[in-house]
Length: 251
Image 1 (tube, one colour):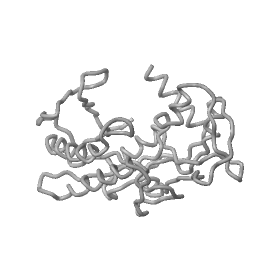
Image 2 (cartoon, one colour; image 1 turned 90 degrees about the horizontal axis):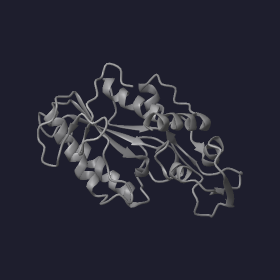
Image 3 (cartoon, helix red, strand yellow; image 1 turned 30 degrees about the vertical axis):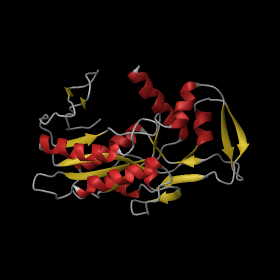
Image 4 (cartoon, one colour; image 1 turned 135 degrees about the horizontal axis):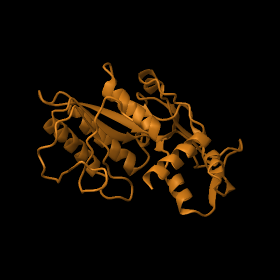
């Protein structure tokens, strides 16, 4: 997964695959060259403002580890709606989660050069992650879904990232020398939600898309492609195949 790197998995409770447990007051961590902060508060999961505090905590952990880099996981929700949004696009979040992630990014990037021991912070703006968004949650729960249908006959299109692409982005940041502070993470082209449901053989029905519906939200990942040899072209059937392979491995 990450050749030439030895991951040390840390968590706040002992669990399968956790090498090191810590608490809110832990100040000494294993030595490491980089820290990947996978934690965060999602909608419905608690106080979203805590995402900014967790960014500060991740930098503190990285300092304790002696790490040169700390990778924070943000979200494409910081942009709001748009097509082929790049890392330099305006941040116009539509909801509290997007606003909280903007605040988190600001805190993380403010840590740059704060003192001699500060690691460099990097931001991964993740698109919808295959297996971890509301569409896949609905697939797992079962039952027929209803999708908006636009005038062109298509359902909503969204950028998605597979686990393989997420890890390619992490490896690019860990291994790269000339790196941007912020990196979009997604497959090279958005996919229609009905294509994912068809690939998963999941039943759905159509309804006319209301005027408020957003036809496409997509990310420009040319910067990520510059940094990785990984093929970022992923079809809907390939996304479903990778999702099922991950579920099987975790079962």
